[in-house]
Image (cartoon, rainbow, N blue to C red; front, top):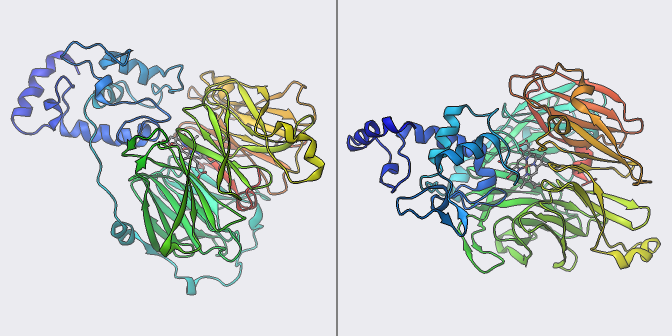
Length: 558
Ligand code: DHE
C-alpha cells in the first residue's frame, strides 16, 4: 500500500466500512475485501506451514509481535530483526534459505504486498467445529445395502493408483496395468492423501478443506459413496486394520480445529470427536496442536496419531470407542510425516523442528528412540531395505540438508542379530540435495529413489536420484523427469515429486507437478532399466502430486 493512500483508508475506517485492522497499532490498514482475499490466500498457501494462529511449525512464527515494526521503536524480537512490509515482501517473493519457497511465480506483486500487510495484523481466530457440525455435514450417497456385493468392474484393483489432482479438487483413479484413467472423482480442495481400507475395497481421500470422501472401488465406475467434513483444514486419514476390525472405522485428523474424528468405515458416520489441545513436550499450553500423520497398527487395534505442535504421539485404542483409551508418548517438536519400519512394529516420525526422528514401539507402547539427524527430516513414509553392511535400515530424506539418512532398525529375525549393535543409530548419510520430500523403495526392487521438488535449482527440482542398494558407493543415477517426459519446457518449474511403485514393484511413477495451466504428466519408469515406459499426459490430469498404489498403500509397503 502506497503511503499516499493511507489517508483515504483512514477515512474509510471512520465511515465504518473497514476491518478492525486499523485499530491494531502500527499494522497496515486493510479493507474488509482485502482482508477476505488475504484470508483465502493465507488458508490456501500459508496456513499449512505457519498455522492458522500463525504460531509457526514447519514455517516461522508470523505473529505481529515480530512481523510488524511497531511505533514503540523496538526493532528486534528475541534478537531477531522485526520484519515490516518491505522485508516481508522480499521473503514472500523470493523465499529464504530456511526452506520458505518463493511465491513470485504463484502470487502477483499485489497479492504479495497484500499478504505482507495481512500478516502484520493480528490473526483472526476461526470458529470451532463441533460434533454436530460434523454430523450435519455427513452424506451417504450410496447406502451400504445399495452397493455391489462383489467387484463389478474388471480392473486389477491392486494396481490402481489414486492420484491427487491438487488444483482441481479431484483424484484420478488410474489403472496401473493399462495406464488408462478409470474415473476422475470430485473430492475436497487440494486433496492431501489417499488411504485404503484393510480389504482394499475403499479409498479414503482427505481434502485440505477437511472434506473426507469415501470411494468404492467395487462399483462398475468407482465413485464417491459417502462424504463428511471433519474440520476446516485437514491432512490425514486412516482406517482400522487390526484383525476383526477390517473396514470398521476410519479416523481423520484436522489442522483446524485441532482435533480428530472417528467414523464408521463404510458410511463415514461420525462417532467421536477428540480435541488435541494441550501441553507441549516442554510443558507449555498450545492452542493449536494440529494432527499430522496417522497410521493404523496391524498388531493392535490402535492408531498412531502424531500431534505436530505438542510433540506428543498418541496411541488411540479403538477396541471400545465409547470408552476411548489413549497412551500419550512425549517425543519432540514438530511432528510431521512418517512410516513403519520393515517389521511394522516401530513407527518412525519426523520431528522436523528438532532435527530428530522419533521411533515408537507399538508393541510396548513406549518411545523406542529419538534419533538426531541432519536438518528438517521429511520422510514421507520413509523407505526400508537391507543395507549391505548394516542390515535393516529405514531411510528419510531432508528438506533442509543434502543427505538421505539411513537409521538401523531392530529385527527379530536371527539372521540380522549381528546388526543389533547399530539399532537406532544413523549408520549412513547418502549424499543428495536439499529440498527432498519423498524417498521410496520396494521389497522387489534393488533401487532407492529420492526426489528434490523444493530445491531452488530448476534442474534439480525437475529431477530424481536413484541409488543401487546393493552398492551404495556407486554414483547415483540422476533422471531429469521433465526432460524425459518430452513435454515442452515451461518457465514454471515442473516439480518431479513423489515416487510411487506399482504393486509388483517393477515400475516407478513420478508426478511432474507444473502450473495449473501447463500440461502436467506422470512419468512411468521401468525400475530395472531406469528407462521411461510411459508418459501419462491426459489433459484432465491437472497438477498431479501424490499417488497411492492400492496394494502398497493397503499393506504399507515402502
Ligand atoms: Fe504433505 C503427507 C502435511 C505440503 C504432498 N503431508 C503429509 C502428511 C502431513 C502433511 C501431516 C502425513 C499424512 C499421513 O501420513 O497421515 N504437507 C503437509 C503440510 O502441512 C504442508 C507442509 C503444507 C500444506 O499447506 O499442506 C504439506 N504435501 C505438501 C505439498 O505441497 C505436497 C508436496 C503436494 C500436495 O499435494 O499438496 C504434499 N504430503 C504430500 C503427499 C503425502 C503427504 C504426497 C503422502 C506421502 C505418502 O507417500 O504417504
